[in-house]
Length: 391
Image (cartoon, rainbow, N blue to C red; front, side, top):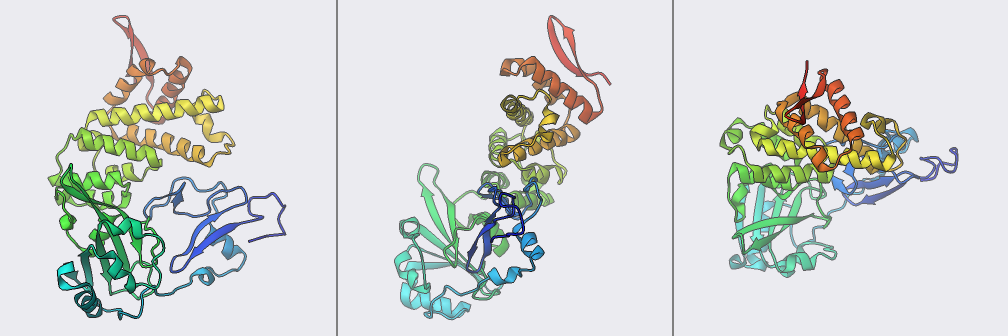
């Protein structure tokens, strides 16, 4: 889309976007290559949660089109990818599997509220269900397949159907799913497999795996499904079933939060009355503090700033760095407000051994003092400087 009323090199002089049948606009970028999607984070989807840093203009492709009086609906093409071998109803699909696939080659795992889930390994046979399958055969050919049908939705709805490739891990004697497509054979990024199960009301152990609260939470954290974590932790029964002080799950949480740089996961924990120390272990909180310090230290060196708060005022060209800085500082403030002070003092005690220079440590001390309205100071005891809050 070209706007010749703007300077040639302005951010919105040229806007590019991609459309997909039954999905509308799926990607959009400005002339400076900034994402204009309000739910996309550097190739990751935050599962329906708004990211903490959008483009500097705070404009999305929807807003830009509205400004130019272009209706968003004109890009919302709809078409059913199901072939004429079935009608869009439960009985027609079950008849297809009975007659074409054969009763011995599939299992009806779930049927409730006009939704069904079918398991089969006959991928070549089920391809005739669709007008187009694209190049996903290799993913599904050697795996068991779960097919989700929701007949409450129209045959052109983008989430009326999902197909999931189920992999078996012999070493762990369990199954997992890392690949889901919808009826247009577009990879599903907005929802995880477990989130789809929850929407259908289907059991978590519909595939071979342990059905404990801790296993569910670990899988949701590993897949960075912040919305699902929030659903789990808002359930008092689920929380009562969790085994606390789980350092292994805490490690998964730490890895996930620093892979995506969003506060969604930690908000899901705090907003439901939990803390990292209570849910995982004190060592998890220390690890998150140290990782955040390290991220900010590297960015301070990169942009040659000593004061971490000054980073937010820099005209940073790298959109990823902008997001990392904002989220890291907000993450520190959130933890300092809601966690006990002892782990934070332990982190300052370890700063020198982690290679942070004295200027950065002093900058972080000032940041903590200002953020908490309590003076953080170092006192000499037995020949070493120990951090403590003096007021």
